[in-house]
Image (cartoon, rainbow, N blue to C red; front, side, top):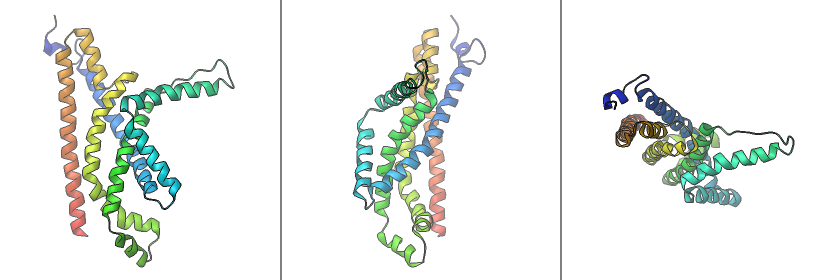
Length: 237
């Protein structure tokens, strides 16, 4: 039987290179999902505070659905549902056509819509915390609505929303483990394969746990640095 140090080494006898690839996939997936979720969440928050009733209704329906569904179910709906729908559509033109949906893109979209549904609530709370006089002040200075949003509202919005968005980022990091269910080679899937092959489940899942904890700690340090930077900029203003 191979020793633990051999199993956790690089090369053909060890699994560390496979787990490192899983870390790379996990981090890439989380970083690719973050801007998508933030952008969608921001515009959903704008819709939910719009004067147009239909936009408010659409935003509320969106957040109700994707906050209510389990993340794993949302992932399956995107991965299998889009694939089946696209394949049926293609077969209207070519009965022999087949299509495969990329698991990375499916994971990014599924996690992105879930992230955006929660991020929209964080942004909405931040919008409501900004006094209406800030908008009026921008208008009094002759700024357009877009410039008021960019120069006056957004800096305050980021500062207020940052703690809530930080928590959502940590949740997103953990939720990336769900993509192992659709075959993406993330940390959990690579650790699971190693555990099944070597029969050292506790060791490899323990290593996966440590990796997630390290990612969370590094993220917390980075978020703290961003928060301090935003605070200094606010003081400079």
